[in-house]
View (tube, protein in one colour):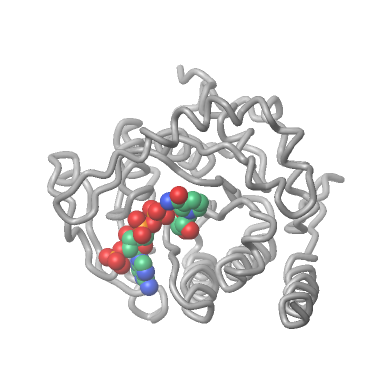
Length: 287
Ligand SMILES: NC(=O)c1ccc[n+]([C@@H]2O[C@H](COP(=O)([O-])OP(=O)(O)OC[C@H]3O[C@@H](n4cnc5c(N)ncnc54)[C@H](OP(=O)(O)O)[C@@H]3O)[C@@H](O)[C@H]2O)c1
């Protein structure tokens, strides 16, 4: 018990340190502080529905062969964008016909030199790279790897950077501290490097059909009904420590739609987009 309490306190204080960066833009405070979970960018500020990307805009999806990344690639193609993807295995398991329209690069975010070529001439980047494992691995893949990508993107003149982060999950944060510390470190680096062109999406559980090898896992069987029910229980998320477990899941198509809009539309407000705002933005009609 003593060990757990001291772990909670240590994690809490390092988490606060990591998340305390704030940037002021035109009088509007952007902050990666976890206090801001309840103060996401306002949906009504984002009048993005009539935006058409210039046909020369190039979008790079980091992790475009993963669960979220492949939906992001498809969404971007549907808007007529030039889309490329970078991951360690390149195209690997994606055999659908839409994938023929993507330029597939191989590279490892942990080796910055291996990703420079893919950023050449790119307008916007969406990072869908992240994952689970030991706490040190989770910090590396959710934090260090993405921080490398942000630095390369800034050097190469990329204009906008969208990061698929994750919602705070109360007690879970303390157990998976490498994951959450990594996410928040990346958000802090983004605020520093792209103060005017950065959006971090913070979904909870993302549902949809996830490919694992040759098997299609229909995560929406559980995710969709939970999303329906939990969208009405926002107040419960305020309960200390366990409240965040009531954060509703969100469909992968909604996440992809908002990520692409945020990446291509300069009018999309910079900052953190929580799960409720992801749902709202995704329901805005395109022209
Ligand atoms: N799924 C969820 O419910 C959920 C919820 C909240 C937040 N998120 C966040 O959303 C993001 C996407 O999640 P996901 O479920 O789509 O993950 P995923 O299916 O595991 O995809 C991860 C992608 O990252 C690539 N990748 C991993 N390490 C890399 C490295 N060092 N360099 C380059 N590419 C690398 C992988 O491809 P290779 O293996 O070929 O490199 C893969 O394309 C993650 O950041 C995750 O934390 C997910």
